[in-house]
Length: 411
Ligand code: A2P
Image (cartoon, rainbow, N blue to C red; front, side, top):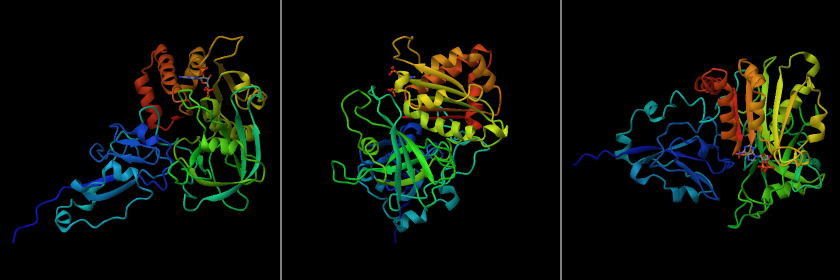
């Protein structure tokens, strides 16, 4: 009898479409461009993925961490994966393949030593961050929250319609930390007749609630009326949320996020850099600090906030009422008639001495949230101010990422 021929077995990397919130983090993180997506799913190309695991720690939901042993020649194709609504069941391998399987502990790809960070930021939280809960509610088990507040936080005369939405969870537990996000399931179906995917929103409120002691949280939602190229587009979830009235209910999943978290030890400093609705996590962290302003535990807060004009800057009024010795506010306005155009990175350069002072302190963490385009600009500015002081940015950047002290969330 002929012996079975050895069969090449692949530990295939797959993304769970039921848990994935389509946040694009994995695609951005993948160092070999193995991850791609269409309007339905995020998928992994079996011919490119080398199992390096770089995408696994940054994934806010854990949907990225799925693996199937398959015969390499029968690996799930991109077309297979794009059509899935759920992961396929584990299939037993043919006997010939099982016979040549490597030992069990050798099949799991080991993360390389440098996956503590993505290209730009850390993929580990600061050492003192509190433990986050994630995925308590999923697509199959969403929680119903009630709208208890919905009001506009940008000038009524501007095109920038940004809302502050407060959701109450009643008796149901929904533990969150500043920097985490939730998913909203908009009602209705997409063009293919499938239920809409969840949309991800960062929390704008601190861990103890929008109103301290209440089981509620807040979001900062911009009504989307055009795409990134400026063409007319109707944001399914943002329009749904901005139009909600008090007492309406919404389906929520999450919470998500295990790395973009604030340090929890006394006298930690925060440098917060944001544009537009990227201010949500900064508001959450600032409010956490504000609520303990009398404890003496706070470090320094330095904020760089970019918007077109003061009237288009969400929460402008309440922000400007915060005491100057509590938070160092730097507004970068790009279209204010009376002022030269400014981006956050310009102000980082202008405040180089103070930024450097904070960077020199290991208790400082940096958070960047907002437009994708500012990521490069902010990194360039940080590099420039560091190099001007005679330090090596490559080394500092490495330290900041390894120690979970530099975090990006851009879209
Ligand atoms: P701009 O006036 O050039 O669009 P938005 O209102 O679109 O959410 O943008 C928020 C702010 O971010 C605006 O001031 C916008 O300026 C600014 N911005 C746009 N591109 C960048 C970038 N690459 N880096 C930093 N800020 C940017």
